[in-house]
Image 1 (cartoon, one colour):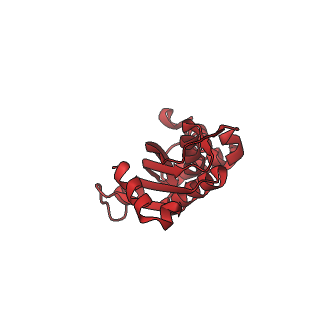
Image 2 (image 1 turned 90 degrees about the vertical axis):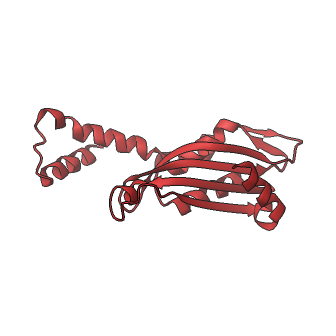
Image 3 (image 1 turned 120 degrees about the horizontal axis):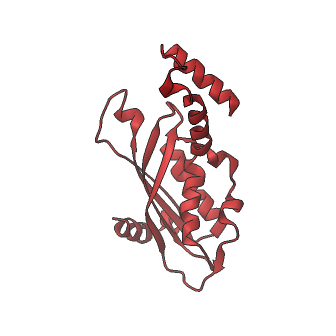
Length: 182
């Protein structure tokens, strides 16, 4: 964290700012703490996040958690992208605590990312931990790297999906999932 503080101090100076002025004195420390929080996914793992919250289930009907808010940083510009994640799975004798689904989303979102990889990582983690019949993940996000700089398209939204197991093989399952998340 100390290294980040020094680097932020240098960035402020390179911008032509005076890092000793009142509003900036603690900025390097605040930025370092912010990055530590925003990238905490690097210091977590799937087993710790799930923490044993898997339960036996008789149901083999689709389970969906919609509108999970997420925030991430684009690995190309280190600017935020954020939006909603929709997760569905068909249990294979195991279900997971609902809050753990959101925590798994955060585990991968709190790293430098691209949305395509993030979507895939969430789906693969759920498939692995649940040994599910199938998993579907759809993410919708707004990217500040596209809205604030470059092409400056303020109303653009990116959608990505990852379908595994029965969600990939069976059109009816995929269609049910996409209909229910709308």
